[in-house]
Image 1 (cartoon, protein in one colour):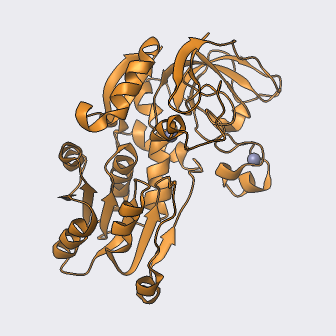
Image 2 (image 1 turned 60 degrees about the vertical axis):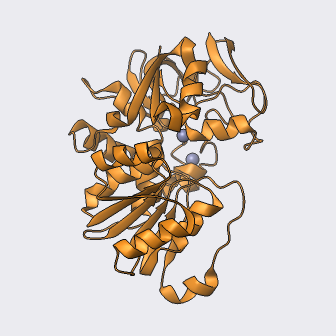
Length: 345
Ligand SMILES: [Zn+2]
Ligand SMILES: [Zn+2]
């Protein structure tokens, strides 16, 4: 089969790989229908994730059709259409029992990381019963690709950890796919205002169409100043960090109202300056996390009912054998005006 293979920092190739086989009775083999590229894949290609070794097939998002199941798989059979979760979970270890699937003793984020991933014609999914979701008949399968990772990540680590509530003033720093996913799902809770902060004016225009009430096209001290001015000097109730840089984290910690929540989603590669000398007296809460995807069944219902429309995040479409071009477009987001790309078999 063909697959997108990591060749070391800066290197990737669309090449021939062996067809995956059932390794454990709880495995399933899925034929990929649609997959996508994540910001995390770009981190890997930069060499930021050394656990990914050359030869690894990238990708942790996608939908497909079950080709084969191991003898212990009970929930799925060949021919079933499935959504692949970016998090693999056994469902029975101590962390899975408390729905912290991201830290499953025999799973977590392993796809396209520690085992071969979804940017291929076929993928092996361990613990298939707990790591796949059935696709309802008639569902928009491209939209469901957004449920593999970005929608649950924006919702669980941004909106739920940030405890977004009715009337809250929410600021989201970073209007890439994850920030947009937080923007879409924050609206479940009727916040009073959602301020999107980014340096890319095009993305902020898109954010307005997705429900942002205010936008700030600035970074650093200028962004802090504008948010303070917009909120009568008070700051925000929830600041969601959706970039993963010291500068964007700094904006978040400087716009918090007393009692606010700072929900960090961004993948950080270096340490940040935490200003405890200012924060300690403010009764603020800071949260972090890797998505558990325990909200995926609920999010699936909201997509089915049209309450959220994640298909709006899709800006470009490619065929599987054009995946290298898809990477080029996705990694030049500002120039190409790209958010999520869909890659179809
Ligand atoms: Zn991802
Ligand atoms: Zn587990």
